[in-house]
Length: 109
Image (cartoon, rainbow, N blue to C red; front, top):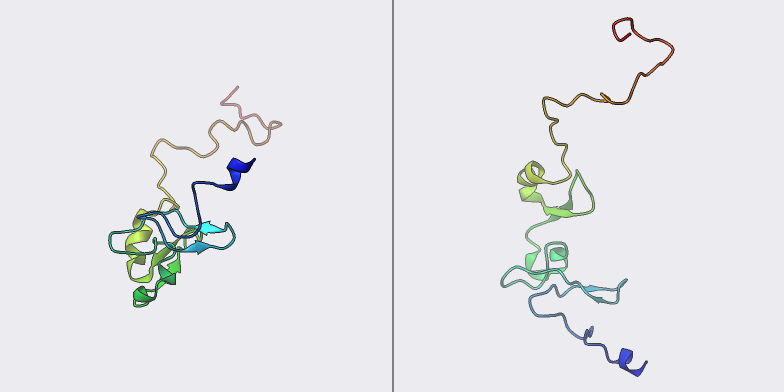
């Protein structure tokens, strides 16, 4: 078990090209990729002092992620959590059977 004490992943500093935000709950640095010239990923950009000019807000469609407030309209068009239009051939509950089996329409018999 002595080998498990010296793990190759340390929490002293983040990996190259990765987010510098320290996740206290997981006791490690965030492993998301950062943009060129940035220290934090998109989720932790609010922690950066140099990016205070832009405000991040929760996505109204899915509060599990955040977006820049000035890019909200663009994001809502492409967010994977948006309601997608149903195809023309889609009919709700087509294979669900009869709702009330005691009333069998004469056309089906």
